[in-house]
Length: 143
Image 1 (cartoon, rainbow, N blue to C red):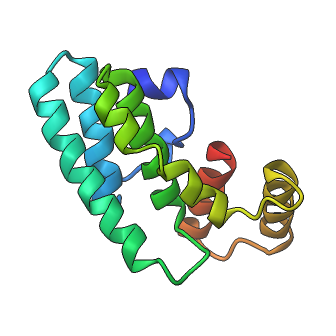
Image 2 (image 1 turned 30 degrees about the vertical axis):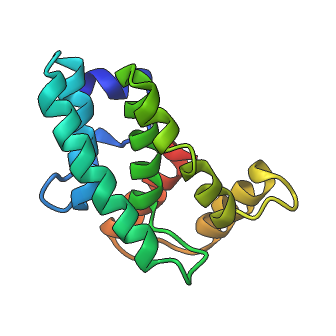
């Protein structure tokens, strides 16, 4: 995670707790780590499992316009893996994922103003727990 986070600091390393991390996110991060270590076969297996779990989560959330931050992060890392793997078919398989993000974040005012509003709302509400602060920090780093 150290190498990836150096280039894409979307995870707040001091607060990342692998024991509390959602399984699809943990697996996709592991798949990227395996890819980074040239363990292509293991990387693809981990990626396949994480992507399957991600699609299950998305299907369960189909009626909601909201996704957890960890699900949004998982979508990003699944796409990142597909792009970095060099497997064109895998990349094409996941091209529908950005459309899911577009449904989560209303595009009427474009993405950035929406994210700013959410960030301001988060800032106005007092953080009541350490877990709330971590969630806010992860959201800010990611978007």
